[in-house]
Image 1 (tube, rainbow, N blue to C red):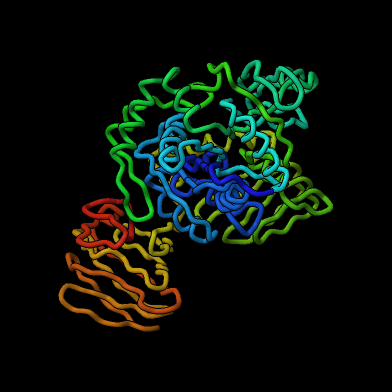
Image 2: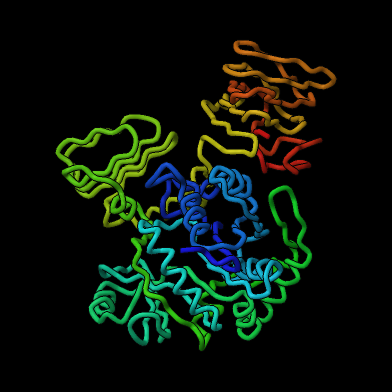
Length: 478
């Protein structure tokens, strides 16, 4: 089945993914995680969307995730554009930006909108459903996919259809209680609301003009003032900030008289909780699913995800254990939907475990905090071949770099030296410095920081190949 050239895939990748805490955090949310394959959820979405649609790929993400998004897209080998949201404004404005860009590419553009963090197991059937929706959208309909339910589910919204097959939508229903969900499923008239859509770009913009004109005006102004920056399209932040924060369902779909639903049955899950991850994972004879280093004895129907150390479980049933380098979640699967509460509690307590891991990714590579004291910090830094950190200085800390593997070119004030394995250098407080990997393999080094303040915002940039500048905590170890 050949994809249609004017069908543009749009992937919404701006979510924060707090329901899968502690593996998913605001600066590394679930769409970037590898949960059910050797590719991330975003990468799998890119692959199947590109197979089903022939137009230019568009990914909409926020500023904080731009380099992660670009790197994961590069790894797939798929080309496309990345539209940056200056602020979180929910799905309706994000799709408006994509529709405006698609119309610039083709006057009859159709956009197929997918979430970056869903699992769909039957890719061929997925493509068939997309074609069904595109055929419907060409006539001007605003189309969504209704997942054929296999159980009563209180965690999803529902769509009531007027008939079998592709049909008009009678109503959208909020997440129900258990009894209502059972009634919906037993009736056969309801689908789960998938949050995926297909429509002509012009039809969507016309609907916004009718139902949300102020938002459309703000999005249009933001897009018309957009500028290209490396791999990204940056829209005007001030204009975009004027947009109402609203979902496409509330802004358009629930008000439109041309909304249609395509029954969707292609192995869909939004994996919005750890018990949902367990349900899509390979299991042993006792129903246990294990990722990482774990041992289970006399345990059934458990999910264990061990990132950094051995997890041993004894005599457990229906439990999820998710271990990272800095925290461990233990939850009964009946309460797995509530993991997001910890992210809220941590932020209220002023702790960073809701937002960052000990390992943080940057456009040049990554760094991982190994130890942190009152006046010192130890990090492991990995710099990709050919990459370099910004030219920078710190006001409150000095640094000592020890090369473990690879080759480094170090700039320190007016001097430039080359370091290889087991060699080191000292960077005094206030020195202007830069780290560069000229080699063919990753550069690994240990950084020891010492000083009165070790926060990631103690940085002044003078030059940066990734377009970052000034004093900022955008890069941390920059």
